[in-house]
Image (tube, rainbow, N blue to C red; front, top):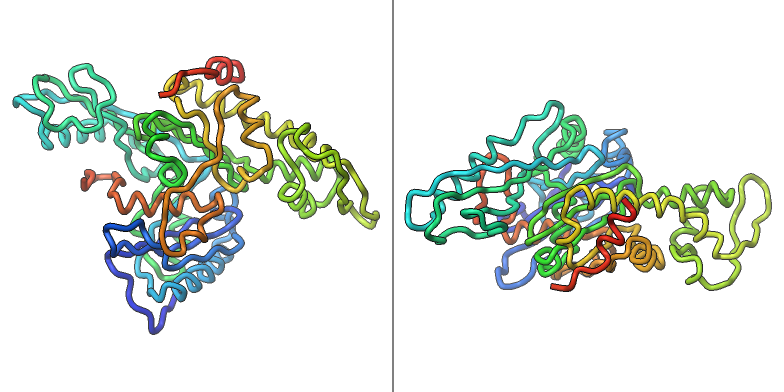
Length: 415
């Protein structure tokens, strides 16, 4: 059981976020006491993940020990005794479900009661999927007398019908239950379970990118997650059980080196574009008792071409089936630890024919510089969601262009 002797109890204006990743397990403690400043990171700890694979629990005891270590270090750094946790989750079972609800309007102008009625109808239309757990719901947009993508319909007049479009984010019930149990095993209750794909959209994308339309590709260690944002709201999410670890496996198999050596080579020497790498030799360890050997660095790029192309074909397929390719004026944005691969943005832009860039994280104060690596986007985004009260939980209501070029030659040609 987690003990925080001598520390001040967690206040209402503080947030403890746990991200149970497959490669790194992170705990961040945020302070919101200054409403005029960005959220402040007052405690942060990342440890090697244990007992988690592809976003699911495979060894509950090992995961609990790793979480305890991270929680203890973050709590001591913040001098805060956590008493509740917000849990970020992700995995291949993550799936979206959309619905709509339409109500008639009796008054001269749309009221908050009208929007609430439309949301309730849309929520009732979401199905209860067996073996799936609803994480939370996201308001896509409203339709007012046929006018699409209205974000705030209150006070609009002269209309007769209001439609609310809603998205529910679901995940395997057993996966969520086991992830929550890891936190509860160290004696801390989970007050909210949030999709890391949703949180990352607020940590990695600027408001302009969400408004004008972006596809966010989060390259994790064992998972790759795509989220599509239009009009400042999430419209689609998909996750597959293959991340940057697949590149390490390709190097290990193609060049016959140990996995640990393949991971090192991927981080330090590999690149996505063969021609962009310097024509130089690198030394690498080999299998068994064989002596190290020298190979041209470009062989590393060649070894990972197939998994990279497979990932981008999946991205093109997901974007195409949403019908939103024409609406993504800001192109594709890369985040996650795998986005550090040299030349990945250039390779992606060339392969898909769409503008591609690395994410630039939203500001977080205090120890926020420690979230500077690409793996901290979901943590930073969760803090911003909490500050802006953007989370639309199950059963409740919210508390409060560039020319289109390349999409058809890119998304549709590769799908």
